[in-house]
Amino acid sequence: MSGGEKFDVIVVGGGPSGISTGYFLAKKGFDVVVLERGEDIGTKNMFGGRIYSHVFDNYFPGWRSEAPIERWDEREKFTVLCKEDSISITFNKESSSEHSSFTAFLSKFLKWMANYAESSGALILPGVKVDRILFDENGGVIGVEAGGDRLESDYVVIGEGVNTVLLEAMGLKSRPSPDDVAVGVKEVIKLSRNVINQRFGLEDGEGIAEFLIGSPVNKFYGGGFLYTMDEYVTIGAVVKLRHIYDAELNIMDLAELLRTHKYIYGLLREGTLVEYSAHLVGENVSKLYSGKPYGDGYLIVGDAAGTLINTGFTIRGVDYAVESGRLASIAIEKSHSDGDRSEKHLSYYKRLLDASIIGRSVKKFSRVSSLLSNPRIHHQYVDLTCELFSQIYSVGEESPSLREAFNMAKRGRVGLLRMLLDLINVWRSL
Image (cartoon, rainbow, N blue to C red):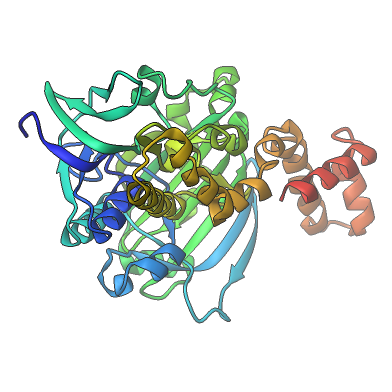
C-alpha cells in the first residue's frame, strides 16, 4: 500500500461491523477499503461462539448453505452451579421450523464474510494498523495514516471494537470506566463429534447453548456460557472489570475453575484444551450506546458504538454489529447523495440506530447491567436455590414440604421483603 490513494470510504477494523459496512457500501457502488490490523481476518477477534441468524437471512442470500456453521442451536439450557451440585432447565426447540442461532468460529466466519464482501467489490486489507485519523483545517475527518502511508477518503468508518484506543487517542471518544466494560474469557475443548453427541444428547448438526450462573463465576459477579461446536466445546464467562479488582482470584484462573467444576468436568472429561482467549466486552449498554457515533466525515459501528446487548440470558453481538454496518451504509449513501458530510447530516445514522432492533433492544434491556451487579443475585439467591433443591431431594426419615424446604433454605440469607423487592426488579429488568 503506497501513500496518496483516495477512496470513497475507509473502514477501520475487519470485525463483523467493519466487514459488514464494506459489504453493504460495495453493493451500493462505493469504492471502499477495509483495513484490519490483524495479520489475517479474524485473528484479532474473539467471542463466545454463538451468532443469531436474522440479519444474514435478510441480507446474505444463500448464506445457510455457504457459511462455516458448526451446529444449529436446537436447545437452550440454564444451569445454576452449586459448589458441587447443579440445577438445570432445558428448552428443546422442537416446534421451531427455522433455526434462529448457530455456533461458529469467528475467525472462519469473518473470512467467509470477507470473501462475500470482496465478491461485491470491497477491498479487504489485513495486516494494516491505522496509526491515526486525519483531519482537515475545519476538524472534519478526511482519511487515515497507516505505517507512514496517507489514505484519504470522503468518509471514515471506525469499527475497532469496545477497546477504542484509536478513537480515544484522536479525542473522538472518552475511555469507558471499569463499571461500563467486562472481560470475557473462553476456552476451547477438543472432543470427538460422537462424544459430544452422546454426552449432550444431540444428533449431528444439532447444538446446545447453555447459560451458567453460580460457583465459581459468582466470585466475579458474572455469568458463564457453554456452546457446542462440531468437534469442540467452548466454555467461558463474562465478568465486570470493576469486580475483577475486588476478587481474590486472577481472571486467568476463572476459565480453568469453571472447566473443573464437577458438572462441567463430567461433560468435558478427556477433552483436550486447544485454545484460551480473553477480550473486553461492553457491559453497561445504555452508557456505551448513549455516546455520539458520528461526526464530520466519520461514523462509529459495532462494539465501539455500544451495540453489544446483554439480555440477562444471552449476549447479542455479531448480528447487531453487522446490522450497525448496514445502517452506516444507508447513512453514508444519503449523505453522499445530498452532498453533505457534516456532523449534522451524518446524525441520521444515530436516528437509524435508535429506530432499529439495536436501539429498541438497548432501551428494553437498559436495566440488565445494574441488575447483574446485585451481589444477592450471584451469592444469596444461588445459595438459596442450591439449598432448596438439596432439601427437597435429600430424602431422609421425613420429607420436608416445599414451604419447609424454602424456609430452611432462605434462613440467614435474605428476608422475604428484600426477596420480593429484588423479584420486582428482576421482572422490570428482564
